[in-house]
Image (cartoon, rainbow, N blue to C red):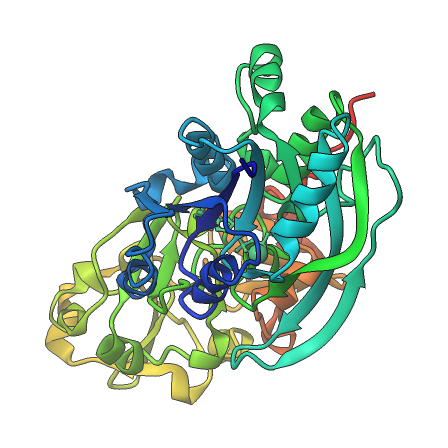
Length: 431
Ligand code: TYD
Ligand code: MG
């Protein structure tokens, strides 16, 4: 009897590539496999594509049914893999993501080595890494090489380039109480955390051939997460991977519909794409629709409204009058950003503190704006100035030329919040 390979495919909203991963399994020269598709409650488009493959009896499909707001709580693919490892029946285990393609000889090459070398617990191979753009065109390619027999494979070997014996799993479970470590801080390299566990029982033996192609897509977690701060600044307008737009307002996300988006003078070019585990940490607030024009309570914050000759900035559910032409100039507001509202609408607003030409505790800075002090950038929110790294500033598509310079006195008048910076926690050896 040929050993059976259990392939665990984790999937989430990759309608443009998930079929490639599944087809690459179906095209394997080696046929004794089972494929467990662990879908993290993808959108309908993705699910429809996956369901087209389920007539093959070797393929099983599981939908996690996860609520979006729970997505950030664990490294989801590790959680899904742990669930799959409870269900597998194979002798060998192999991991696949929804943006990776196994070459046809991947299973045959790997199983042959494991069959012929009973002392090998784990094998890994070379990988072709292919970065593609939104339309699927190749931006660049490189080969991730094998590096001999590895006793510390962490961060050297990709998720999709490994096959290991199922017999190692009970040993890991007995020692750690779980297979993969799904703590959320390892989202960047949960595979490294698991490789470290595996390597306690077997080195990783190289197969110096390219056996899979890893596609780096614009919507991949790593791509979207690069330079993204853990907290989004208030006033930011973002795009989800499902192409919905939201205004971030404190801890709330408010969905903006298309008509309202235009009427409220938001700019498509400024939309920042964010990954769902981050976006859905924000509670859902009232949607921003046309109806906000007839209810001041629903009108979004951080907009300029104009009624007759008066201009206001909406903030904290109020309209803050802009005190003078000088004050307006300082805000670098553009005529095209002004949203005209009828006098009846303005009457519906509570009038907030005026925005004056200089800021201090009595004349608070407008929230949700970018400021500059001694070449450092800050965003205002919650009465504070939050420092922002230059890379984060670019990622969030702030226009530096619109930053409002602060005087020393002004700068000293406001408490400084926590810095908006990019941090990536990589799994590191504790030894
Ligand atoms: P991917 O976006 O490809 O990240 P990377 O940039 O690191 O390649 O996602 C990796 C895997 O994570 C992929 O198989 C899908 C899975 N995943 C989930 O299961 N749930 C989620 O909420 C997300 C964002 C990803
Ligand atoms: Mg990926």
